[in-house]
Image (cartoon, rainbow, N blue to C red; front, side):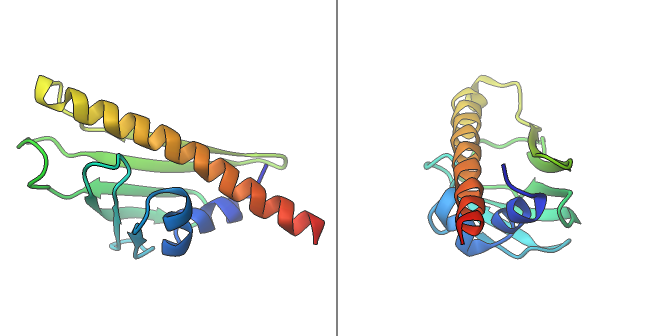
Length: 135
């Protein structure tokens, strides 16, 4: 288990993102900032951060990408942290993927990519917490 502050630091640091999310991931951690990563190992995406509440919530609004099929839909990834005295729950809510067969493989890559990244995030922050506890 790790505190919300450790998880938030891992979500909002380019150096930490590079370790658990995707090589070369970059973030400008603030409302109005940006996020860039290759979570699915195929498509690099860039997003605008429109909600930024430290240690609670960060919402990414994806920018249009020439690598993806055209759509009128807006892709969104919303990270929500729910901290209690003994644990922090991280929720990643994705929305806006069109119900179109052109997007089926993209959806599965994104879903699988984020699932794996979230597992790596858990290991990343728990190892950091274990190192602090043993110091």
